[in-house]
Amino acid sequence: MLWGLVTAYYILSYPEIRWDWKTIKADKVYFPNNFMWGTATAAHQVEGNNTNNNWYNWEHQKDSNGSPRIHNKDKSGIAADHWNLYNNDIGLMNDLGVKYYRFSVEWSKIEPEKGVINKDALDHYRNVCTALIDSGLTPVVTLHHFTHPMWFENLGGFEKAENIKYFIQFSEIVFNRLSDIVPIWCTINEPAVYVSQGYFNGVFPPGKRDPTLAGYVMKNLLNAHVRVYRHLKTLPNGDAAQIGLVKNITQFDPLRRWHVLDWYLSQRLNDVFNNNTINLLTTGQFDFYLPTMADIYFKNDNAINALDFIGLNYYSRMHVKGHLSPTAPFTFELRPQDTQTDMPYAIYPEGFYRAVKNISKLNVPIIITENGIADDKDDRRKLFIERYLYALYKSILDGYDVRGYFYWSLIDNFEWAEGYMMKFGLYEVDFITQERKLRPGSHAFSKIVNQPGADKRGYIVSIGEKAPELLLEYTDGRKIHLSDFRGKIVVLQFTASWCSVCIQEMPHLEKDVWQRFKDDGLILIGIDRDEPLEVVQKFQKKVGTTYPIALDPGAKHFSKFAHKNSGVTRNIVIDKNGKIVFLTRLFDKEEFQNMIDKIEFLIKQ
Ligand code: BGC
Image (cartoon, rainbow, N blue to C red; front, side, top):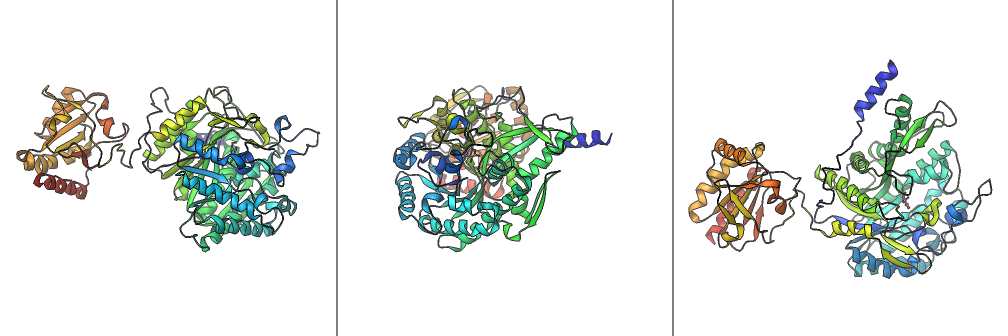
């Protein structure tokens, strides 16, 4: 009985979000005009010749059964030779139309021995940044992306709090060298992934399986972020730099929604993997609790608001099955109904929306620092891109402060424990010839990147642009092209009978715009968004306006001005030359008055 109630509570509190993809036009999305579009990579995965870090060491080891650590015995080796081919790869970014590039600097190349700085390596990264800027791209630098020098690993890496100082020193050196030209900085990539893979599942170095140690390493990584953040802020350019943490969100959902154990364990995993980082950065409190496995608590008030933005990496969710076993209380299971990527991740765009919502609790701008699909056959990439970007677009429409999106990844790369088998690249790489080729599925990404953006109010047109042509059909059957009004000032009001704010605004349009300026030659036309003639006629009668109303079946006119899913009322003022000169949204008295002033000014001209 009690279990039933607890399960019912979970089911009601965390409903399964599912969208009806049959009715969604996932390729019709409009991102803000200044949205940061980019691609991302990490040093060890693409550069080549990283022979002095924890991963190099790992790639050359065998596990206790004598099996290689990496799938297919792969080694990162020369990787995609990005170290030498970065100019070529910047060209690929330009071809995509993106304007940002997130990459990581390789600590083991910059500081190969403790306290010894390789100036050439630092210069290399400066050259990469300069080349990006010269090509119109903005560099975004990650300081730690899973790899660090062997000397640091040998000292115990992030297992020891006293080692954090080495990471701070390294970060300062990089920051001092690049912060005059790099505006956005990521401190640490995905602490929770580093910890779960390296200290829980044992598939990343150092290959341990120790939940309590995992909790301590997590604590040290998060404290390292906080200290690096606070320290870089005190350096020259620190104030202006945007410095954030990169957080992977992977939701843990119950495999059996009616099973209390699946629910309970999912919630604990969500806390440990996702929520405790958010809690630390908002409240200064951190709890790492996994029943029968780990229980760690700490407090760090310095962590509160220790970030200018949050980098969100999102791929998918996991389904948790609980077991009555103290040693293996849960397993992760794939569901037959889910479309999988080549990694064991289901395609789940709704989860992307959920992740944005969850991370928004931090109350700082959100940058999607990674999202992408491993798809060797390239038969799911287009669908993935369109649906995940739709989810992101929806989150922006719903008011979440998402500023940018970095696709993972620009090129195929060394996918850690999976070696070269996973093909995440927008560009396919031939690892023998180092030739890059755009995958057909990647066009979906560049198409969205290059299409006109919408502003925060949903407009896809902006002031100064020529108004698109429309063939208007009035309720009395007359038809006229918008361009036939050239030489006159035109106001188009998008409206609808169900829209209360339209009903509020229309009497003002009637009195303060139509009655006042109609004899001066002003044209005011209401355009009713997608309603039948009879409804529009009744509506017009009800509000008592006399300016003409045109029909807009299928919101075709509307979607030439604003994104189709965005709302009415809105007014578009067009000058005598057919140029858009003023745009309103909702009925804001001050904005409305400014519009009237603008009309008056245009008429007097
Ligand atoms: C990591 C990347 C990795 C990607 C795909 C992220 O967790 O930051 O380095 O390649 O996932 O698995």
